[in-house]
Length: 401
Image 1 (cartoon, rainbow, N blue to C red):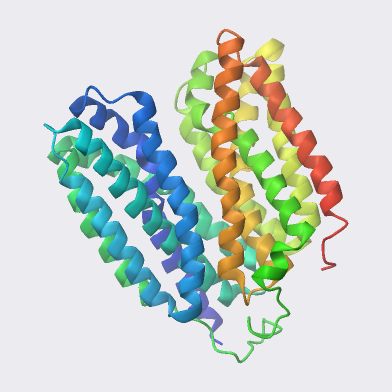
Image 2: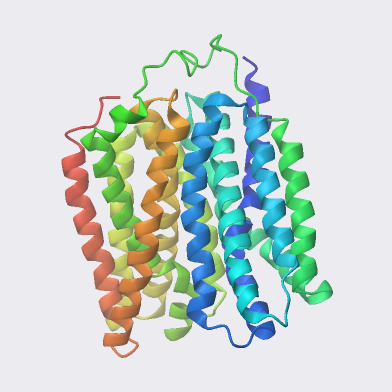
């Protein structure tokens, strides 16, 4: 096995996930849509992103099934086709037909784009990780960093495109660009040969693995899912409002961008930590990150001011970014690589309840406190404490490294 070649595959996978991460750039599209369709409410627009996240998870599961029967290249072509249909469909919305345009937006952006991203996401991560059986943490971390930063790195370019050529033409251009990137990148998505390399003890097919049915019967899987829901929910209490929180306490709005960069950096840092120390210390460290974020934010809110708020937000970014990397690496390490595509896709369903619980709790707490964030920061610490209890129970079921 050519170890130099596997790094080129990792780079290609990261670039593809960078473009697939544009699904997170929905906030950039919201304002232009509101200017065109003035009767669309905030909740109607937000529902678009929620639908896309649901079909992202479902697409990942479907991708895992497809990868059993087809090469990753073919699965990525299918992902590219769905994304082309989705972006192209959005470009054909009629500004004069508000109601039908909203329904079409849900179908095109929510179903086709969300599902297409989920299929491509799982195909890339599952394939590249087969080349990194010895280092699943760093491989997952780098790719997920690309995915998480896609909306940020490419978001400014998309925003410029919208101002230059308009919203609908931008979606038409994205349909072409994303399709071309995925098709070109698909030729790098090859599975490694069964012969082991010098740096790997065995190939993916030779490492003991747990079937999906067996995994679903495992307490370790469900405890990990609960753990991930708790920490994702805690992160979402602040991560989507980082700039707003910073401004509320007198810090510049650019802090929101820095938090997003920490989100990306956290994925690589935690991936490297996982490869070196294994799942138990990694999961515990992320609980500590989350609790520390809530503590610093609370102290900054009640007494110590902006420096503590900034530190809390930066740690929150690292903690939130670390969780998906730990999900990928944990499933790979705990349940093996053979059934990883489907197993990993099922672990991603933790995103759905977290995406509902986090923002819902945040809205309720801020409304009841009259706009203050003290109770929100306390809730982050409480969720981290509950996650710690779940972690302690999970430890009983973890395989010894």
